[in-house]
Length: 214
Image (cartoon, rainbow, N blue to C red; front, side, top):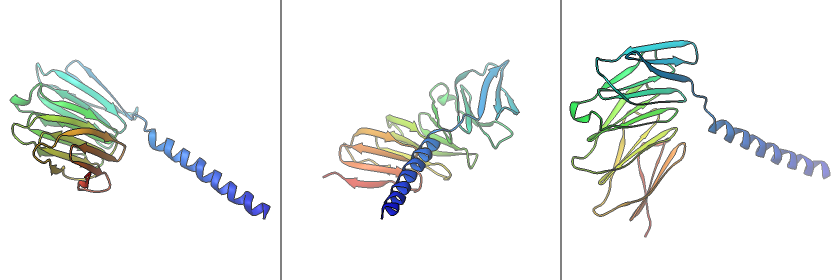
């Protein structure tokens, strides 16, 4: 009986330790790409061995840059550049003249996000491609955030979600006079609390889920 109890306690302790180790491993992703700008070039050094460069246009100005996990990115006044650890070249997304200087860029280890006046663009490190969603005309941008496996863009009339390894943004319409109260992103889930509802978007799914509060 004593041995049985000791065995049970041992299994429980092992499960707790394994859970802690798994949780810690989930939190830590090494930055695998180093980026730099030099002499009108953008440079990526991938995993310390492979160097990839791209020549900027004359007078093209870098506005933002970042690298996290498997991705590196530059935002200029003419392009949004992204590269992943599985690519051999920078991927350029041209910007329109009316988008120059108006983009908001952010990055997670797996998703790069750009929001301009009328579109949201995501780049996924697994598919290595840009996906785009048109934002409603005359809408106000309320929030644009990205975490490890999910990205969310909220305007005054819509909420857009993008999950890693998917090919499109998924959107849900906000009701008239419905307002955003809180937005919380974890590694794989976005939770949006509005004045009327609780909306959730998970990386494992492709649709928004709605939970009534009243």
